[in-house]
Length: 166
Image: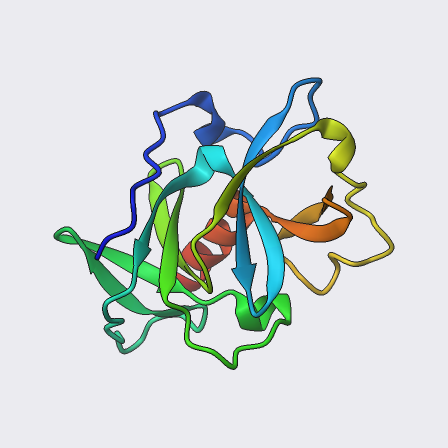
């Protein structure tokens, strides 16, 4: 069964940085990977779907684990757990499709995400004691209900995927 789509209208967010410190609140998609929480700017989230199968494709970059058929569209799938240093013990059941510009990739996730509104004071400095140094796709950290979550930088992730394909 398909999960409900999180369709987003086209916006100017597709061309700018993933998150911008502004006076207003920011809508995020909170996901779990290997038991850890991560956030994605909702403007980059296309939809969430339940994985029926993953088809491996020979010669794909290491960050891509295969493809899935989403209503007749082939979507490349990425497993960010190794690059984020989180547990890869369980097989993810869902994927969240993220988009930046015309690029889109499904990111394997453990659970159906939660949509939250955060405020600028929830975003911590990007240089939070080197926490993001070993996690190249994190733009920084944010504080949600007294727990820390990494903020995924979709444009940085998709640029790295495109670089490995060339």
